Length: 142
Ligand SMILES: [Fe+2]
Ligand SMILES: [Fe+2]
Picture 1 (cartoon, rainbow, N blue to C red):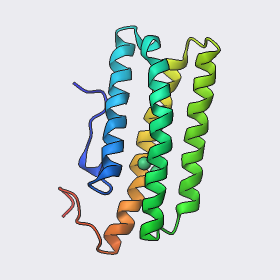
Picture 2 (cartoon, rainbow, N blue to C red; picture 1 turned 90 degrees about the horizontal axis):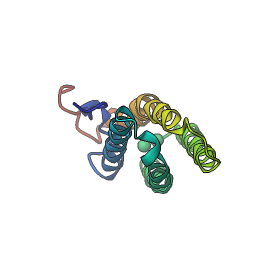
Picture 3 (cartoon, rainbow, N blue to C red; picture 1 turned 135 degrees about the horizontal axis):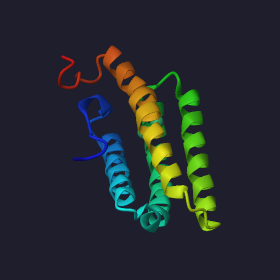
């Protein structure tokens, strides 16, 4: 069974933003599986590299979306993005310097990113859209 399951309450735009978030869920699960087999350290370098590039892209996409819909708390939201990116880069440096606990730290960082940022802060974006009647409620909330 997957470590972190995608759930309808994670849906934001039923489009590219959700696709990015789904990919992240897959990466969290990949890291978890590798760690459970004692191979987290083997994939963490590649994963960090992927995540850094994809996160830059995701943030660009998501912030353009926030601007397009006139989301009122985009400055605070942006700060959360910058913090995460900074944390990712710091882990990459630690890994490059030979850090041996980076897989566990990355796992923790991604778990927080999913459960705090995506599940709460990104979710507020969907709540904003719904309040404006611009998006249908996801299954189970209609
Ligand atoms: Fe996001
Ligand atoms: Fe976000």
